[in-house]
Length: 176
Image (cartoon, rainbow, N blue to C red):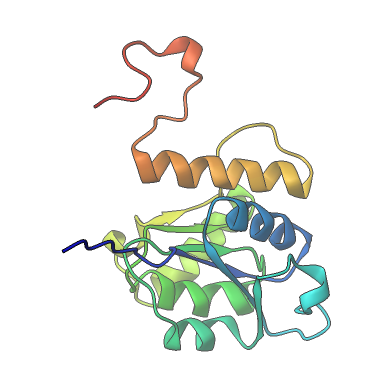
């Protein structure tokens, strides 16, 4: 008997159909994720703005996530950058299984968002899962550069990388 099994691709859920979301969706697709982009604004959440094969959903993000399947491999990127979307969405996200939950915004935006989440009743343990500001410090400026920064953080967390340049690390690059 020969048995060959395949796990379905991990999910990447991108909330907020902005230019950064299109770049994150492209790199998520490139990395092998099954990508869904969700935004409540139909003018932004149109399939023509995203790569073929990316599912585009027009729905309030927290409502969509409440019904979505997530697991320990799911990546959640919150790019809405607006408290009316971010706070209810992160209340749901931080209480669900996921490998990565990242939210875009400045440090000031993060501090304000965190304050609102505490007021909403999230615990320190739940809040500790939030990666915000999202991504690694690459000096990114364009949506595509930000997407590389986000992808780099996701890959580093997935495989236990430090995010440090290989030129300053020692030992095996790919430990056994």
